[in-house]
Length: 505
Ligand SMILES: Cc1cc2nc3c(=O)[nH]c(=O)nc-3n(C[C@H](O)[C@H](O)[C@H](O)COP(=O)(O)O)c2cc1C
Image 1 (tube, protein in one colour):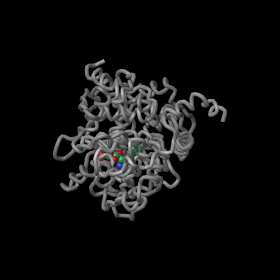
Image 2 (cartoon, rainbow, N blue to C red; image 1 turned 90 degrees about the vertical axis):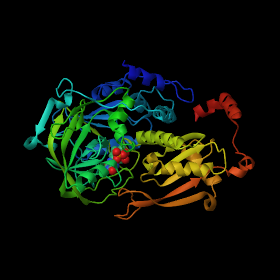
Image 3 (cartoon, rainbow, N blue to C red; image 1 turned 135 degrees about the vertical axis):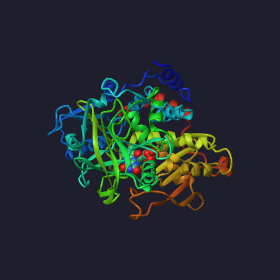
Image 4 (cartoon, rainbow, N blue to C red; image 1 turned 180 degrees about the horizontal axis):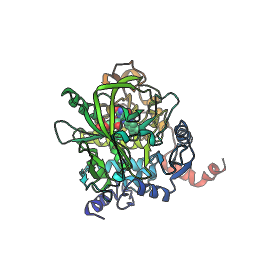
């Protein structure tokens, strides 16, 4: 174990509640090593013969809709019409245990343990920049196969057609879109959807305000095409950093390296010298074309709707495809939640919001949760132990305005410390009983939304927020009627004496 790894292990060994997490030791080497670990803990299923045309998407939906607790990761093998060993992965980190294993925390008792452990880790995160390796197959297996120019044919991979009303096959869902800033050394990667238009052209949809959009616009402002890499098979740690809001100027490679406890190996791409994950599975290289557009979408999205309508968007011309022998395409299929990634999104977002509100000075945070039915964005809850007048509103404003919680938010709720923010019954009970709508709900207008918001008109990128104060009123909180529920002591005694009744029901 390297020094960096052992330090990370030591840090992760105990969270602020005193719960000890057995560490998995050095993180997995790559996706293939990760799959073996996943199989070892009994959380991977292999399905053979499922077709790319609607079946992969519908089977993933069936599993994630019907098995919301601890659903497995799914490796689709022997996909009809494709070489036997070309595979598709769905739902990589979408259970508390797999997510904990991936991040190096041991068996969580609940999702809250993973939120806490991750919040504790990112509190004093030390970024670990990527390490460049020689462009050789031994050090960069992603170079095992390279298709150049006319050889490029994206249909050689078993890319799913996910939902019935999609505009095409989407090769990029669990992807990393890697771009370098025009004015600095910042290399960003974000997860943005990628549709195949033809064998060497793809559509790329990046929402307004996303870092990829900001970088692209700088190249376009100079009349230039924008160089890009699109990795569509890789370590789940890279995807976790890519698909959640890491701040501007920070490299997601370095962010993921900090989660890994050692640097990610990267190799320079042939055309633009951009960093390819050296142990990645499949990576496309090309340029976003300033003067070439095609219709992109529709695509079934995380809100549960085909929300961003079909529109003209700049295409990417793909000139290189780097891939390992027997490659694995990593996917994340959005749609009406729960989806194959919605749980992991909620954990990471909750930990990020928790960390960001504390860094902005909010005391006494007891918990944060982003509801899975809101795709990790639309309905977020923060629990505090009220310490002063105005504390609850401060929590609402900070949680709503944090970078992790801002984009396409909708409802933010603050509750007292006796309410578990992850328990929808408790949260709705607190709203129903402690919140007086006229006094305790504030509306903020003109917030950051985007084309995926199903409730706004095409072209309108603003939405509003409801800030819901479901805490007992601060001034008379001690006089608030007592909760009509057995005390914890009576509950414990009752369970010990009469718990057998529950087992018989
Ligand atoms: C599975 C998945 C797919 C996503 N697809 C898109 C997308 O198509 N366009 C987009 O703008 N954001 C998308 N996002 C959200 C971004 O990846 C996320 O906001 C990320 O922080 C963007 O990176 P950036 O902060 O560097 O811009 C997706 C997230 C996930 C988890």
